[in-house]
Image (cartoon, rainbow, N blue to C red; front, side, top):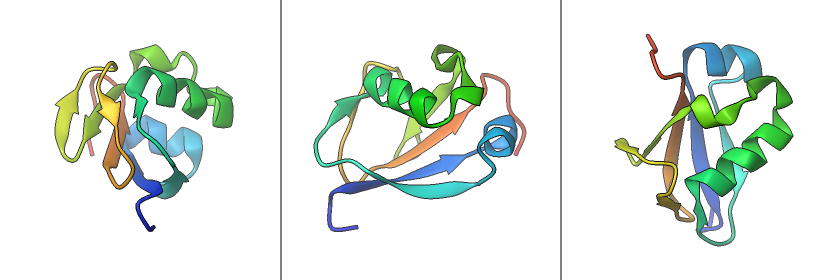
Length: 83
């Protein structure tokens, strides 16, 4: 947690598929949301296709092209989600 991880939050169906609501994820350098989502799909193939998923970084909805920085909080959810 020394600036080389991100906090990842999973909501609704994404949480069900990953089996968790949140986790710490190693991130030593900034990556685009697109790159990070492909890493997420590698870790959790059951989430495919990940391009449909929405991202929020530090509680702001962002495009997949947004850079995710070490220390960020990243929320992952379906296009239409409850809680």
